[in-house]
Length: 113
Length: 112
Image (cartoon, rainbow over all chains, first blue to last red; front, top):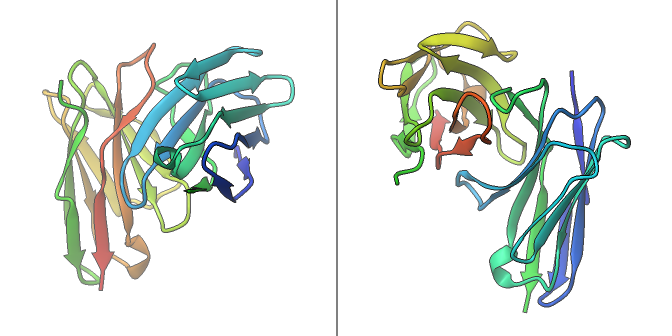
């Protein structure tokens, strides 16, 4: 079965600093999804990457997909307290975005003032 | 435009009981997936419904069953509850192809 490994598991950064979260898959990626979760709440969709080399940005968050390395990264520029939460990467196990998703265990981000 | 809605938000049951969780998908979505998220873990896929049929299933026992209605809403049923079933149950909806899955806020199920 496909496994996703996220690093780091947790991160504490000072407000205004940049940070990067990595997600590595044990198998071929058919699509990579980034979600954010507040403790005990639902997942908020951030970005979807489907093609090797694809890069997407939304506000201060940028995600990239390296298909050959079966890896994705999420970069936050000039972090803010609102960025705090758990970031989860999810991978489609087959082609088509209706495929079931396998998730990593998440990266817990704290942003200090 | 209402997103994915789940009910109830919290539920407490005892071992051996049965529970039904409900999900209304985002408007325009016809596919519903259910996930179980244990504390400190990522969500684990339970099953997916499309056109009122179970299309895919994860590694969960038959105690977990579901249903999708003609209006695309869905139910997750769990029989003979075990302590290990305590988790956040998430519903996600999507249009068959072309859009990502959108999640509800989940139902927190506690088994005593």
